[in-house]
Image (cartoon, rainbow, N blue to C red; front, side):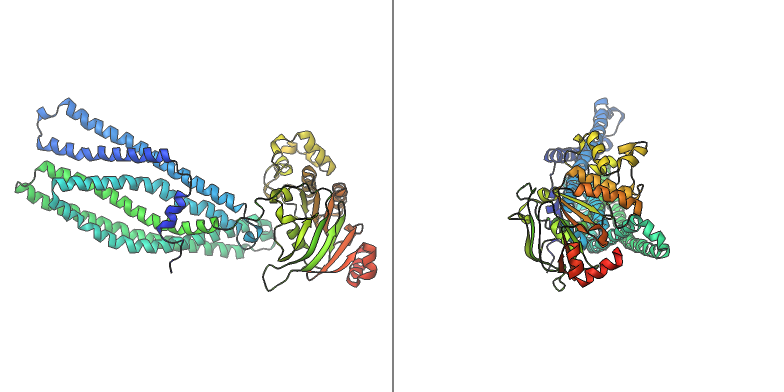
Length: 577
């Protein structure tokens, strides 16, 4: 059974699902028709000039008509090509907008199994192939179709015998390019997949360049990169082989037709059946057909490539959006969070969270402790709604959180992780990242949160202050500085719920002291969830949940767990004595 995403229909449907600029398209097509008609007049004028040639026939009006025809054709051709190319550019821009809007609203689960680099390649590379077809080859093909139709009609009127001789070659051309076009579809599909894979691997390697170098993995990455380049070259060579077959064969057929027409037409002229002007005009019209046929052949092969890209684009556009795009907005201040009999698994056969229940009252600090792999980070992902529980529910007050809009829920959560994720840009841009009114936030407010997070002093040391560029992933800042920026960002959001995932795990002792002070300020009066392997950071928690293999095996305060939970007691002895 043919896949519903294969064939030409999905490509056409995809194009017309975008905002096609109708006025520009209509004007572009009309000017193309006029341009073609102007071009078709030139051979007729040439015929009349040759058949009735004399010095007296070279009148100023006649010469002016020929010159005006050439100028009109050039001007209208330029206008039509631009308008149709602009239509193509706008269609592809709209297509890229759809893909980008879709990608940033897909759930985290999609990116758990898909390389972000590959998706970037889809947005740029695959749509680039569609763009080439729509904005470059399509306008030329439209002009070519009108030129071929008009030329054939005039040739039939001039001499139907020579026209039939020429038309015999069209089936030969189709027999050659159709099977080659099908091969081009398969090659293009493989090339796009390999391009996406190579782009994803390259982005990952260069993005983690320090890990690569400290691991002395240059040789390994070199082999992977060279293999990817070789694979891309092989697909390119396959494309080249098809082009190398199409072009010479088409050219040979065309040359045969020209020679045959000249020979046959010469006999007709010598016998008096046609005039010399008719033969010349016929040859001129022949070229009006040959060039567009070459263009249409190229358009066909490029269209086969675009069909492969279309499949990948449709795959992305068909992905379901993250839940919570709509829902109610609710201020969750002074509301208790209830985790009720929640279970979760990434795969059906492996349960990561097993029937967990607990509550967090307003202003409480809930700490998650336990060995690695116990499910602590997964619980954070469930609260943040990166994932949905397999069973059970999470409520804020009496309301399940999944009836709130994702925007309303996440905008009231502050998140500080041990990685302290930063975006490339300035300190100001990172502080205000994600806030809808970021351009209206006064510097005084930014300096206020910087002071609250103990980051104002080091920011002032930079010549450009808040407008200092921090590099990709904040590489120009130290770990402690990034953490304090992240805390300042959380202060600025004024969250109702605070989530901290090993927020001081990777800091030196001096930075940790400063960050701990900032975190203490930030936590005050907020419901706080903390993940910590170092028990010294959670001894004052209102409730500690000890997780093992996805289940809560102990809960209580630090003092209570020391006396009631053997493994927690062991952890405490190792870390706190």
